[in-house]
Image 1: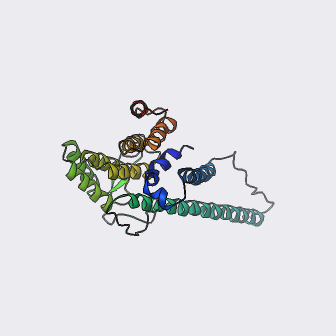
Image 2: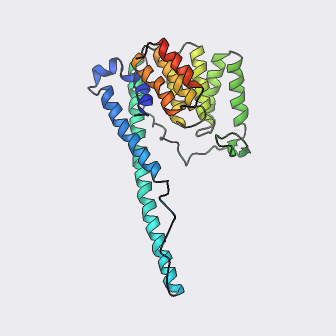
Length: 276
């Protein structure tokens, strides 16, 4: 149920008026996304080897060995296509569910008009790329590998970060929002959403801040800023009065990231909310 923290965090959309409009309960949504989480874990196990590869490529002649290789390639191709279809099914289902949660959140916000725009594909769109020419910037990824950033991408991110550091929350929120629009799929997007949420908190807009923290965490739930984003999401839910969801979300910080420095911070926040 580890993903339940994220689910119930997003389910601040169901805590008030939405329950009166829809008979679906928090437990229903938790169950649905738990099933989705289990399916994702099953897919991850597909990438784990079960032993040394031992394809049968034997043959008494070159022609027989070529036939064996061709048969093995066909088998691997079929397995790849099957796995790809399963991944696509999970992505489609997860994207639809996130879109439903976004709609419910909009229903709770006075004056919010749901645009009906397509929900960004879960996990990002591999076909989307920045139009500007990419440049390589080393040392930005969690594992130390090089990642590619578009021209001006790092500079725009740094400008927004500086505005946040200077306490100019409105400018920081605007710049981070522009960054997210200008560089879809950026490796800096999770941190940009996290910092945008902090800027919105500085402006007193806790609900939009919670949305930004949720976007940060869902953008890369295993990335370097994921523990902080999950903590900030839980804390924001607490400030919104969604104490039960806040406690569950804050508890997930220690479950998912036991070695993170934010575990202690989340524990303190849970104590302040009197979480059981």
